[in-house]
Length: 114
Image (tube, rainbow, N blue to C red):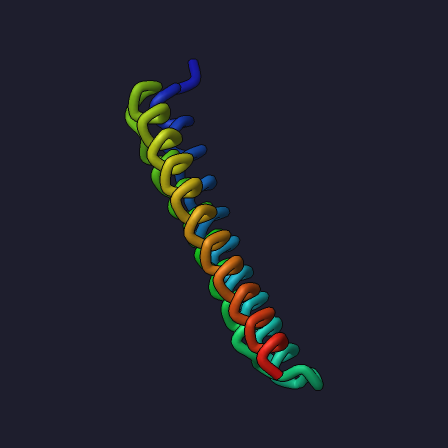
């Protein structure tokens, strides 16, 4: 007979290892992107830096969600974690949209002044 508790522990361990490996691969990817941006003719501008920061926050939030879901105790915990994640992402999106609008208005203002 299969020991269900042992099987779930093995499965959880594999999932945690996969998430940790994904963390390492994303870190490598961001290092690659940072080098590519710094080597590009555009260089590191305020916009590329802001864009990279937004992407990094989004990826970090997704990994944090994965980590929390892997450790959820029951369905109620899963629902709470997902609700918190959704609310946090909506706040972040609102903030990013506001910042982008402010930057765009500032750019238009500077163009009109010249």
